[in-house]
Image (cartoon, rainbow, N blue to C red; front, side, top):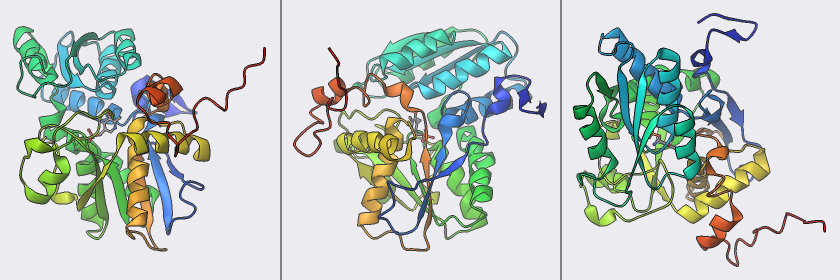
Length: 346
Ligand code: PMP
């Protein structure tokens, strides 16, 4: 952990301690103050650096991981990138089973970071042998000296955020945070952060962001797993077709659902208004804030922290591609932005 004059022993020393950045324009008409915890400032450009480093170091402490061992995981991309980065520095092999919904850029990045990648069909049930969960489990069984991170069902995923993201936000807001708004995928980020914040002040309101097509919000409200809630959607890393044990539903007050289309436009709006180039789920989280503001959730004393999980560069072939947006039907009469801002000089 040598850190003098911004000189570090290796890239892993830069994990965590991300900045909290005030939102000045996009939230200007809203009541209260709004701050983004911008996780793209992690060296692997997402909040998953915290989880990968924490879980791998816990396994080392328990003597489960030895040099040369293999780390296996299912991932929509970000966790894979972080595990690959940690594996390089610490000398492990890295095998990743990813969803076919992941952007090609993400898959190329994982390859570049030395990981062996298996791309599995997105729209099969979690217990289908082709699902990325089942493929990872099989590879774990077949690979001697392997560790399966299993982020959806690993309590250490929650602990990683309880020990870092939570305390950072509490300190950065000097204990004045009133609301936390965060996307829920594995649920590790929101659960660990919320648990820490609520221990400091039980009145902090914690609002999760879920996708239409995911079972999480309904499960939170009814404790019923409703298969009828499941259908394909485009946002990566948010919502689920199963109930992860890395989600502590008791520390989350409510969930808001957001659409693919509005989240994509809101991500673009964050870039245009705040100069922050962030990922699709950051757009989803900001979209949830818009809906909460409209529902009267905030007042002038609100100090809201929204988590922006990753960087926009991972979505160049998706929400930041005008072609992709057009193909999805996202440029309609309401949103005519398209490619009009580019001028070609002939
Ligand atoms: N946003 C993105 C881009 C992600 O990859 C993830 C992780 N699946 C999340 C949000 C949600 O974070 P968590 O898994 O901690 O709930």
